[in-house]
Image 1: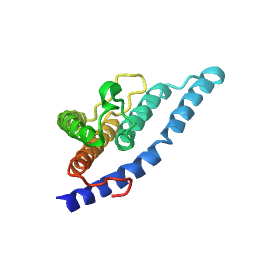
Image 2 (image 1 turned 45 degrees about the vertical axis):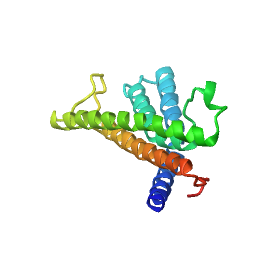
Image 3 (image 1 turned 90 degrees about the horizontal axis):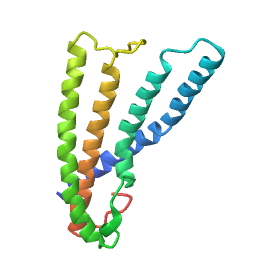
Length: 173
């Protein structure tokens, strides 16, 4: 199992690292959209699309950057007891808690898939705003983000199992 797990970790971590490094520049896309919104409201006719487009960009930024954030350990953790534990104990607790995350992400993926299918089968579900963009593209991005987060959570589970078994899990696997 350890060689297959290490190969899985290597592939998923590399993929999510690359996606995360690209998506982190999405903050500049959001800034540009909101800057244009401010400029157009001040000097021109206000744009109808800017607020919703900024929201869509934020969803893409958040959902596609989430797996990279998990990989970096940037998630919020209650450090009341955790900081004092040994690495072995941390791996044991992390292996248990990441199972809850995996189950949650499976249900989230299932619900997201149902929503995406509805959006497509409805004949092109649209937002109720004045701009009325199609919703299936952002739902597809959300599905991709949830799927990548699920893959990363499984990778973290494998890392924890390998740590529990005494393998040295460094930056490179």
